[in-house]
Each structure stands twice: as C-alpha cells, then as structure tokens.
Length: 304
Image (cartoon, rainbow, N blue to C red; front, side, top):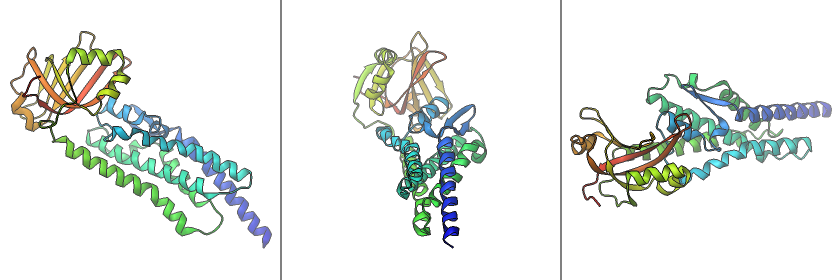
C-alpha cells in the first residue's frame, strides 16, 4: 500500500515537471497571429504586445499609465523555475505553481479577448484559428501545473486557482474596453490642453528622441498648430488631418463623425489649430519614419 502511494506521488511529481517545462517553453513561442504579425506570450511583459497592435491595426493599451503592471507576467517563467527547483530538492511548495498557472491562464485570456477586438477591425474571422498551437499548449499545461501542484486532494483550492486568473483578466479587460468605448466619442472640446506646440516642433522632438517624446506627450491633451499636409474626408464620417515633414514622418489627427461639420471645409495647405489626446508614436524601421497619432480630436476654436 505504501509502495503504491509513493508510486502515485512520483507520477504526480514527474507530471508536474512535464507540465512546468511545457508551460515554460510555450511562454516564449507565438500565441497568436494577426495577419503576418506573430505575438508570443512573453511579448506582453516585454512591452511588445501593444506596440505590435498599434503598428499593425491601431488598438492601443487603454491604460498606458499602468504599463508597468504587465511586468507581473515575468513571474510566470520565474515561478515555474522556482517550483521545479523545489520539486527536485524535495521542498514542495504549491504556491509558486498556483500563481504561475493562474497568471498563464490570465495572459491567455487577454490574448483571446484582444484578438476578438482585432477581428472587429476586419483582421481574420475566427479567433480560435488566429490563436496558435503554443497558446493551447499553455492552457493545457497551466491547468496541469495547477492540478499537479500538490498530491493532496485540495480540489476546491485548485479549482479556485484555475478560475482566478481568467476571471480577473476578463473583468479588467472589459473595464478597459468600456473606458475606450466611452472615450471614442468624447472629444477634448472642453478639456484644458497640457501643451501647445507647432507641428514642426513636435515632429522634431519625436525624430530626435521618440522615447522621451512619448513619455512627455502620450495620453496628454495637446494643441498642435501648423499647415495641413493631407486631409482625408469620408462623407459625413471620420476625417483624418495630417501634418507631414519632408522626411516622411507625420502627425495625424483622427476626427469622429460628430466633428465632421467643424473640419469639412479644411483643405491641404490651410493653417489649422487642432487639439486632441496624443496616442504616442510608431516608428517604421523600414521607412525610418515616425507616425504620431491623436484621438478625441477637435478643432481648436481659441487659437493660441
């Protein structure tokens, strides 16, 4: 009887090791593919997740001031390694395994929900096809890592950890999505500007150091004065107004439908004063140019 128990303990131990190694490897492999853009699990804490989404499709992190919170997902590989070390030193502690598994499931949940948003932009049709094999491996191994974290039949605790990550991720994501949707139609008409600058000066700042300029301007309300280079009008719908520099970099203000009447008569070459919330910049390594985007845009009626 005792020999049988020890055999079961040994089996669970090695299953735990296998699940841990599988989860660790999957973390560094592509979890999703948006068109030709592959995004790995580690891209979230590495800061590449939203960079790639902005570069390809436009959707950005709704809480850029909380970017640092995504570093928590670096705990996944760290805690897996800690857990495996404890296994091999016969100092089993199930807490690192529970947290690593829960964080992994939370991260997969974020990838799934964000990919559904990408589909709404016309990229792909089936979220389950866009999710890559390593993401499914991550789910299976994360579940296995939690369930084999202890030999004892702590089923209530294990099930709680299984649901904890996805529930928190889903709730936080939906809250962020609601915030973004609320801001989509909220212009900066009555919001005091943090900065007033010419288009030439802003472009020069970003070209000189886009990282420093992003820290300064991202999610700030900015008034930009200059000569409109390009005006893209969609009848009674959205309008984009650009300020270009000779090297190909540009600032683009996106106006929603309710602002159309204010900007419909603006043409390339007109001197304009625009106000909006800066979404930050995207650097194209191929073209060696910078795109600076603004949302919640409006015409600055009190030019200054």
